Length: 161
Length: 116
Image 1 (tube, each protein chain N blue to C red):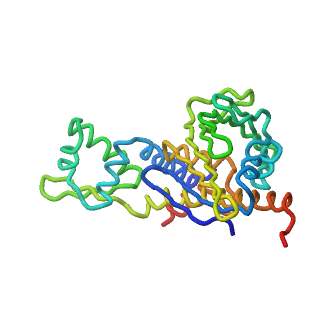
Image 2: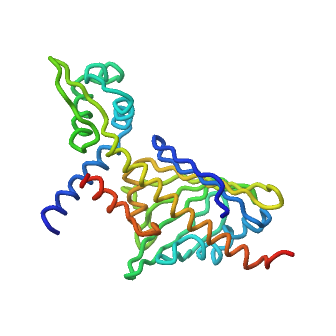
Image 3: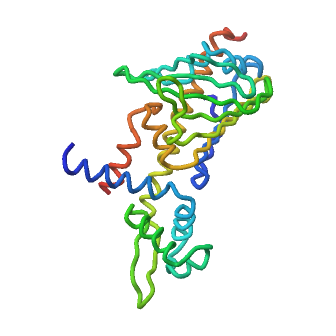
């Protein structure tokens, strides 16, 4: 299992996850640089992702959508901030309408992905920060959740307890 | 939607509304660590007693904080169970990431056939 470390910061609503991949840094970078590879890994099998535009360059905007099992479409954008190939990139992930206009009323997440050579492979560190619990909730509601439990079930459990 | 579902949705709205404010999250952190009087809380912020009281009331309506009265003091404490739901959301996000990382691993294995 490539995941080696996970940190939850409840106050900062930040998830940090570290994974070790058995491939060189450049190869792992390619997964993120190439939209055709990225869409194979980004969405869970139930919600495949399609990247319409995608280029890892500072100031570039990626546009993507995920398609749910009932055909529902969830659109999002990445606004690339810093890009240091092949070591790291940072971006804001925001919700968008079907024309890829950012939906300002919905919170964005700040993301930082870093890749470093480690023991013949690559150590990847992914950090996602949500400004509000509502933002995090919305992301989970959008269907990026894998596995049986949805956030809403957990709220129901909470309310039932 | 049944009436019960409706009630649950209303409570979920209250929960997320309550957590969407920095001051309220800060108040919640304090009262999770131990019971605080509302006046002691008010002294910690650069805002009026009434404003802090309002924040506590929002947290209380969301079920994140409970209050009891001792003499003239209103004492607030955090409801751990309710806060755990935030941590369960981060756990869910973790499961999303675990899935994603497993898929990256598979994709990398495809382009790198098994090594000797």
